[in-house]
Image (cartoon, rainbow, N blue to C red):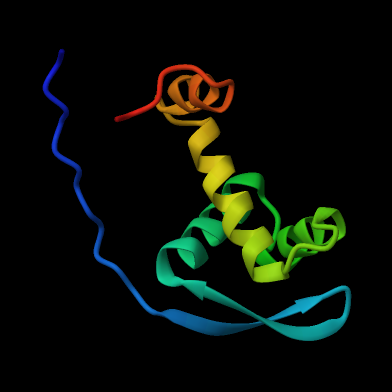
Length: 99
């Protein structure tokens, strides 16, 4: 059995409320710095403003809270572009799990 690699932990941050305008309505979302910066980076890469991206997320979130939907969007967006994507797909399909 292979020795597991040590897990590196990020610098953890507190949740901050951030004001944003969605479809002309001012609202706030509560996100940690990493999710906020990830959201802004995705918007920049997609060449749209952050409000437009959050508006797209809002339109597809269903009954999920907006802040939670944004976190899931950022996480999934970045995960899909990482080498971990295939491992995550296998784990989701019921394949190999960590012990």
